[in-house]
Amino acid sequence: MHCIAAEYNDFQRNVIMPSPPPAELVQRLTQHDQQHLLDSWDKLNPSEREVFLAQLSALDFAEIGSLLAETGTTSADEKPEARARRAAQPRKLVRLPNSPQEMAERHEASRQGEQLLADGKVGIILVAGGQGSRLGFDHPKGMFPIGPVSDNTLFQLLIEQAVARSRRAGVTIPYYVMTSDATHDETIEFFGQHEYFGLDESAVRFFRQGNMPAVDAGTGRLLLAAPGRLAISPDGHGGMLAALQQAQLLDDMRERGVEYLYYHQVDNPTAVVCDPVFLGFHVAHGSEMSTKVIAKRSAEERMGVVVDVDGQTQIIEYSDMPDDVAAMTDDSGELLHWAGSTAIHVFNRELLERLTGGELALPFHVAHKQVEFIDRDGQLQQPKEPNAYKFERFIFDALTHARGALVLEADRAAEFSPVKNASGADSPETSRRDMMALHAGWLRQAGATLPEGADVEISPLYALDADELQGKISAGTEFDGPVNLRE
Ligand code: UTP
Image (cartoon, rainbow, N blue to C red; front, side, top):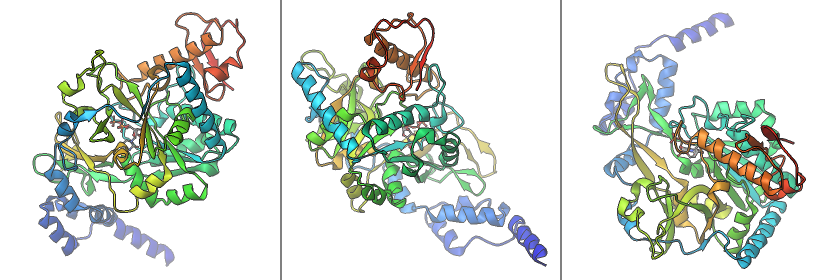
């Protein structure tokens, strides 16, 4: 009897029933000129309809409508290009040390940062929800093999730094990983397969960001990826705020005594995770959000720049920076807007709490992109030109809400070589090359010799920096082939 009932339920789930869509939904879609979404309703089976209804009911058409009304800009009041023209150098700025006194200040900041870590006041946020479309890798980007000798993944290289920092500090540093629908399941499985790369599992929290639908740029209609499935994508790294709140992780941070969050992205294997100098300066300057920058290579380099506009520190995206403003120089011929963003930040937990408290929201940025979709005849279309708008929030917009924003300059060669593209600039090739040059430099600093052009990799678990390496390698050590120093 039970068996027959179960079979009947299966039958019901899989057989297409001639039931019309809910009248309230039809009315809502018609009101917003989105009734095309129901074209394939009759072909969906009951469980597909259920999933589709849930997707549609989560949509905020009023919000999408107002974003569309402002396409080509952010939803902020002023056009970004106009803002860029009023940009000045950030005021609260610590540049690379240039004197014994500045070196001493760095040492003091480092000491303070180490103390914050040892006191258990620091947590880590890794954002790994992006689709990595430019890299064209078929898995979460964190799973990309990047170790120049080991082929270890981005996840592993970054997490081993966190493990090494925890050991040095003598505490477990809480680790928050943002995923998205695009990366969640595979990421969790990957961490499990690798025993969390040595992290204390109880200190790791995964949280999933939200999505935003893609909208046809010509008609303003939402695109379908398949019958009964909207074309959606993650809502940007700024989606972190809502996602942290939804997963109640700000409470988790508070309960663990975490006051500062060290934020970095999954695509920069040379990012220094929990850099004590950065943490120390952040606190010493009474900053609520701090950001690391590097000097741009040229006016044309495609990086967001950190500037002050009307006394407020903020990041202007590359695409929002008019060429003539990007090319402006000071009296000594240096770029005026040289401070390229590395997307490494420190937040006070309290700022994140304020930003999730309901009154403040980060704006959406609109991007004109190529998005695959099915047309009204159910045919898959793969546009060659941008055809749709996508909407993302950027976490760096939190800077404008921070009470005190410090900008710290870092050395590009030591801290910034992201993996964005499949080839050319910011690709696996350049990132591996930069990592090898950095680590070869550490070895030579320690007095070791190695053949010119030898492949070199030093695991963070072996040495986190040149100083630590110096304590482990005796001067005069000769390496004659590829070097892969591991614990
Ligand atoms: P990017 O802005 O470079 O985007 O992300 P991406 O998705 O990795 O790559 P493209 O643009 O599709 O080629 C910078 C960092 O922000 C994270 C990414 O995982 C990466 O660590 N990110 C980006 C998110 O976590 N969520 C997002 O919605 C977007």
